[in-house]
Length: 240
Ligand code: G5P
Ligand code: MG
Image (cartoon, rainbow, N blue to C red):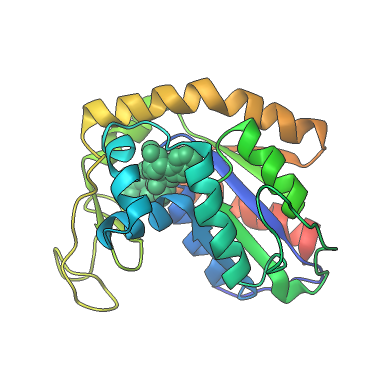
């Protein structure tokens, strides 16, 4: 696949139902546009759970039950990450955001996968750094459900596999490190349904928020392979 350079900074959010392919598309986008890096709020939370941090210990029950973690918790985690990646000023705080002009340098381009999830989270992010593209990914729910049971992950990196769709080169092993793949604690059908319910409750106000700011773009498809070329075309037109 050929790579493309951005001419201006892209600050992108991926919104979509659990299992729609946010992580899959983020990985593909980073390969096509080397200036992009991605942060997945779910991966950050799972890392905190694995490391048994105080926040991770508190978040674990919410995640396992398929519910959203409280806004304050995810906001702290994301703000720390945005600061350590130097995407926002290190002076910023959630209670007292000090918005700085976002860098126009294309190397300051990023994707947030799974954050913000609520209109409250979106407003807080607005006060830290404005996003310039919100991608709403849509695939029929019955198609997504069939993928969940065959998902395997490499927990330390967040790399995602699927025994039907993108199987690892060696069964049960991560392609890059060779380490064992595991199942996510929230990937059984019942928990997935609860995650979907939460998505249905929170996504419309979130999308409305961004529609009002004229940064919302919707893409539909029955598979990730159908969606990826449309995404590339849109990002080429907007940023490359
Ligand atoms: P996450 O981690 O953000 P979800 O539920 O939003 O979790 P998830 O499950 O990570 O989203 P995804 O990233 O959209 O799904 O999808 P994916 O991993 O790329 O693809 C799913 C599977 O399908 C993979 O196995 C993939 O290989 C395969 N696949 C992809 N495309 C295709 C295809 O075309 N065909 C086939 N056959 N397979 C395909 O959040 C987890 C929890 O963290 C908390 C919440 O508790 C949440 O439930 N959380 C937050 N709480 C509050 N606020 C926030 N902002 C939060 N963020 C996370
Ligand atoms: Mg994901």
